[in-house]
Image (cartoon, rainbow, N blue to C red; front, side, top):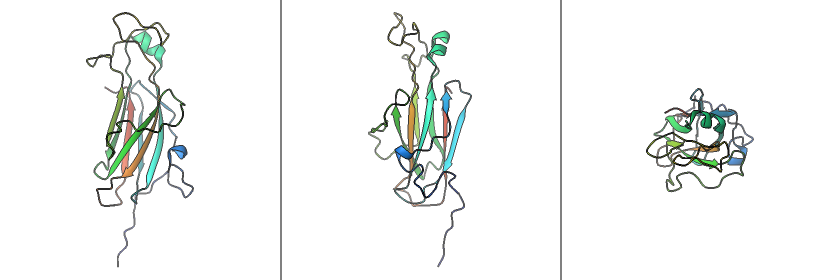
Amino acid sequence: MSTEVCNNPDPYEDDQGYGDTISTNIDLWGQIADDATTTITIAGNALTYGDEDWYLVTSKDPNARNLSASENDYNVHIQITQGASDYEMQVLKAHPVSSPLPTTPECPTALDGYTEYNDYFDAGGGSLACKGTGDDTLSVAGFVNCTDMSSDYYIVVRHDPSVSLSCRPYEITITNGVW
C-alpha cells in the first residue's frame, strides 16, 4: 500500500469554506489599476474533482486619467500561468464595481472553462484613443467615449475533470494595463 502526500499547501484553504463559493470568495488584493504597475499572483490547488477556489479581484479604471490622456489603457488579463494542463477557470464579471453577484460566466459557451481571459478597452481596430467631456453619457464627435471600465472579477478555479488528479498546484497571474 502507498499513500501520496501533497507537498503544495493552499494558503487560503480552511475547514470553514473560505473561498469555496462565489459569496465566500477570497478578496485580499485591493484594486488593480490600469497603469501596468501591479501584478497579482495567486497560488493554490484543488485536490479533488468538484473542489472550487473562488477569488475576487477588483479593477480600477480612473476615467479622469483616461480623459486627460485621451486614451484608455484598460486591459485586465487573467491567466493560469502554472498548472494550465491540470486546471481550468471561469470568470464572472460585475460592472460597475460592487454590483450584485454575477451569475453568468464571461465566455459562457466555453462550458469546460479556459486558461486565459482578457477584458479590454477597444476604440476599434485596436486603438486605445478616446475623448469625452468628463460625463460618461456625453461623447465628442468622431471619437469613442472614454469609459470607466472598473469591474469586479470573480474567478473560479477547478481541476479539469478530463485530467487525472494530482498534487500539482496552480498559479494565476492578473495584470491590468499591460499591452
